[in-house]
Length: 156
Image (cartoon, rainbow, N blue to C red; front, side, top):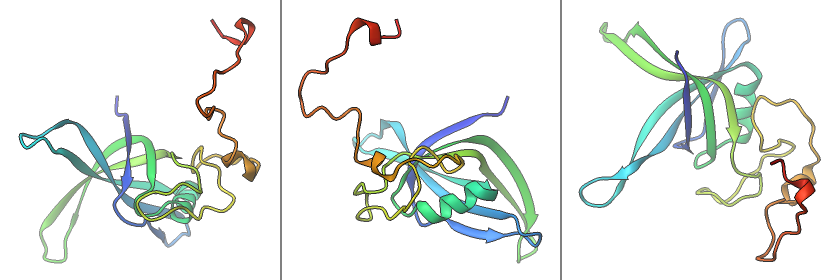
């Protein structure tokens, strides 16, 4: 079984390219915090290279940028190629099957906010057309007031 799930922030803007046959491919690096601190009490991060193909690649390139919070679901893949110096280069990366946008388009992340026009924050590979006003309607925002839920609304 080969399954990888990551949540982290992009270390730089995604890089979008096209194969000779016209297939989109985007590459990006996620900084994923470790769950523990080092001896100095600082939290370290792993920097994990990710690749996504086709329409999700175009969405990632259009709507994510440096500092964006993203969730990646995919598989770990190793490959090798001959470098410019003639030496064998080995690469391990996550091939993403799904990339989820984990912040709304108007949130203020490390780069001062998003500019993701027309994209919902539920993922790069979802084709639904959600109302753009859904970003401002946070169902979990209650301004500290009690939430009125009847027993009939609970699933258990």
